Image 1: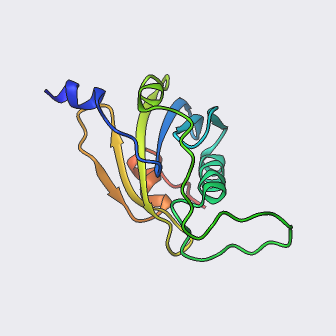
Image 2: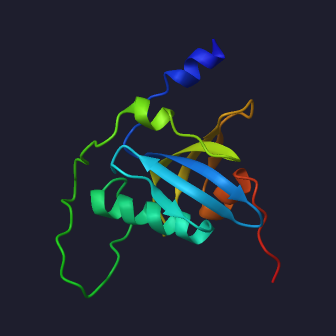
Length: 146
């Protein structure tokens, strides 16, 4: 039953699948989303968040709590944007990382951070996070000492 549930997981547009291919002091891998046709490649934790944030900003979902300022002219998505779906659930489910694969549901982006739920593909239950640091801990990363 549990295996069947994993194979029928539905991916809302505010979910991303993170395929971690290397986990040697930092994370390297790919991000898959229904909102982009090709994977987003990241070489470290910072790029993971920047790539996903850029995707969410371009699609207008999940909305940011505060509008980011910049001085470039560009079209901003509508306040209540409807993201265009570019990949099916099956295409996303077919992806997996060499080290680890997790699904991250970003419920909101308040206080310049992410809040949501992370779900692994092993027997670990889903875990809630209130910031990017908590998400990194859920992914098995330890904050670096200064």
